[in-house]
Image 1 (cartoon, rainbow, N blue to C red):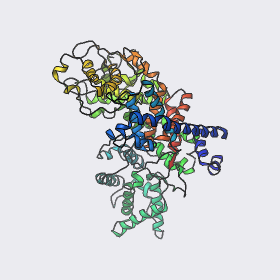
Image 2 (cartoon, one colour; image 1 turned 90 degrees about the vertical axis):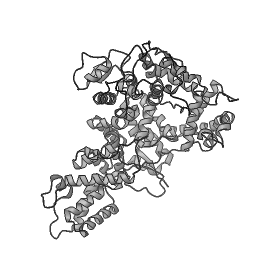
Image 3 (cartoon, rainbow, N blue to C red; image 1 turned 120 degrees about the vertical axis):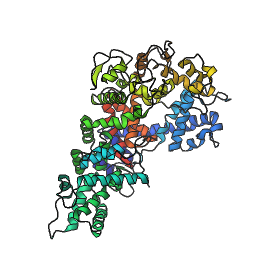
Image 4 (cartoon, rainbow, N blue to C red; image 1 turned 135 degrees about the horizontal axis):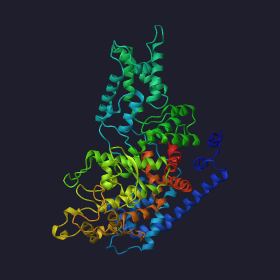
Amino acid sequence: MRKWLARFFLPAPFFVAFFLAGPDSLTGVESKIMDEDARRADAQKVLKEKIGPFVKKYCVKCHGSRAKGGVNLQSALSNPNGESSTLHLQKAAANVKVHDMPPEDSSKKPSNEERLQFIEWIGKIKYLAPRDPGPFVLRRLSKTEYANTLADLFEVDSAIADALPDEVIGEGFLNSMSPLQSELFLDVANQVIEEIIAPEGHAPTVLQKRLFGTLPPKGANLLEEVRKVARSLTRDAYRRPASESELEVLIDVYNLGRKNDLDHTGSLSLMLKAVLVSPQFLFITPSDEAKPKEKIVLLDDHQLAARLSYLLWSAPPDAELSALADKGELHKKAVLKAQAERLLKDERSRALFDGFGAQWLRVNELDGQVFDPKTFPQMTPTLRTAMTEEARLFFQSIVQENQRVARFVDSDYTFLNEPLAKIYGINQTVRGSKMLRVKLENTNRGGILGMPATLAATSFPNRTSPVRRGVWVLEQVLGERVPDPPPDIPELEEQEHKEIEGLTLRQRTELHQSEATCRNCHKVLDPIGFGLENFDAIGRWREKNEEGLDIDSAGKLPNGRDFTSPAQLKKLLAQRERDLARNLTERLMAFALGRPLGGYDRVVIDRILENVAQEGYRARSIISEVITSYLFTYRRIEG
């Protein structure tokens, strides 16, 4: 009741901060508001007095009205919170950081101190963004979610959706539908009807009775009975109560069936088919209409239940979650947090890896990756499956045991079966096809850096790729932004033969550093990639390369810290726990929201990191904070 009253009597900024602050006193809320206001004032000053002059001095000649490479920093400074502006400023910071910009032939170049200051200044721009949870993305169910939903609601095999095309998703999910997909969804709906509804003249199936009830008795109000069936069907299929107008549409469909000589059951089947191809079923949509003049509102409980269950289970809300939504209890922070914990403890939470984890680690395309069968005959479908399963089980163990995020990078255990154990060189203790938790003695192993799935996913068909591995560590693990490579730079295989004759892979890769346009990025990327060179393209340990020469895995991180082995590299990266936690939080938040993160999103991320730091940067703490966050539980009203 107190929060409900606060919504009407506190100014909007106070209400927003109240939710962010949780049970803090009003004094604490006011403190957070004042803190944000002070940061915003500081950011405005930095933009005017620091960033503007820096861009004018070093950048605007090439990135002004004539935007080289499509990057217009002059425009970005006039609207620093625009989506394209944010992207351009992030690109600028990334290029300045690695000394790619300004180019080496520029007459004006900033000092190292100026570069570091510019990166710090750009990081303050987020405070210029207004308090805003961002738009709610009306997104379509993914292929997996669609299959799981049909299986849950109608007890059909999830393979019924196999004919749908596989999808490539970005931050989270797709929100479009092609004519071909519409036809395929209709085909699947027809298959569902054929499986669960008995043919005319046959006794109804048990599921049919549950969905349609019994035939209405003579004298009953037929359309009222049909309305009851429609209301029951849509409550589960739409994941919320249907509106009266939505029910009227379905009754019209039923009447259409009767006009076309379908019997009662046939007309109900046609109505169910309409439900299965409706946007309300195929998309996650809101139920409550916003009140006039409201610009930011809480998600309604049914929408919140769907957002939560599809994030953690890739499936619709179960009975308990739906009941809480019906009661209007789910938006309470303690209730929502408890439900997130319950869902995570269920075996269906493996879907969090299948949807998010595999995409984050980039092992989701391993099944389709090509390897030279002569060089790597071991890469059978069985081994590929074991590699992905190892990553899944490891990810799940970190989450289920609420371990620190640093354990993703540096751990002393993994999950193996006999085929995968051979890749690890463990031939005595693991037998059979079952995946077992195994203690690792080799400190170079353990964690995602020494995992065959990630090592193979970042390799070429016939060899390793230090560059790919370096980019993967910086972007996927640490959350750094790596500038795009310049055009027309040849791959190693395309280099002049005389130029590379007799050179090792490391020496050939280092040739890129002789190019002025490549040097600065490769100085950052290559040492990390070389640090993993003891692992071949499918993750086996080796001391010598293909030419029989000793592998040199020594390198230096951008901060000057040296390492001579994968074990030392892991230790150094694990020390950057806040960076690891921020990267995981940002990626999970973007996935959960189904959109890239913008200005105020990163202010909320900062708040989350403050909370998870107090709990030791633990994985489940991050998930819980994301789910109970302002961004996850509120939406902006468009228009």
